[in-house]
Image (cartoon, rainbow, N blue to C red; front, side):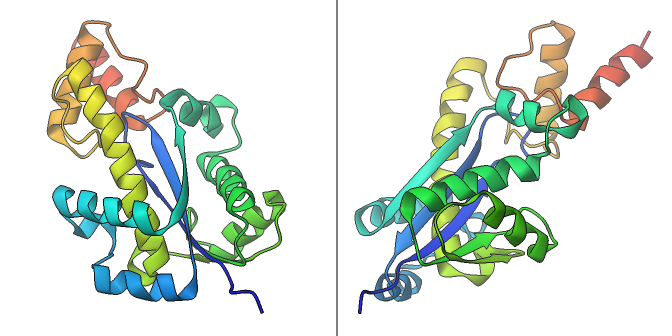
Length: 216
């Protein structure tokens, strides 16, 4: 009997106002999945950048994985405010494509929606390959394969963000909660010099635009 193939899926950069959304899927056998804990694989957010990169290199040697990089304009066009189907739907479609590409038997997904039953139904509606799919809230903390996917996605996104910093200077983390990111955005807005890598649909940008208008 053939050994079952397991898959974990996670993303990085969903909430960022700057740079791409990266979705990664890893494929492993049960023995490979069991070995990941001993390597120290964990939710990427709990790891230092150096540790993430070390694990990324080990995972690249051990596992098959696929990654999709969704640029800011793709994320913006998916938003309902712009007439799109919604960010969750964008993720569902690409998760399904990754599953179709890897052809696993069982898939564990860090759910884009807190309603995990809905997320599962949506992914199944787009996927062509028959697989058992389980969606989980905070899946990167609960499942080692999802944690592995989170590391891959985070390191891949960090590479893109590094290149953006080389082009545009230090904009902080790129997340709306970061004061340095907000100051950088405000500066770009004041000079009418907003790069294409900024997500136009984020409320952070609208609030900054409004604050500029309120100054007059």
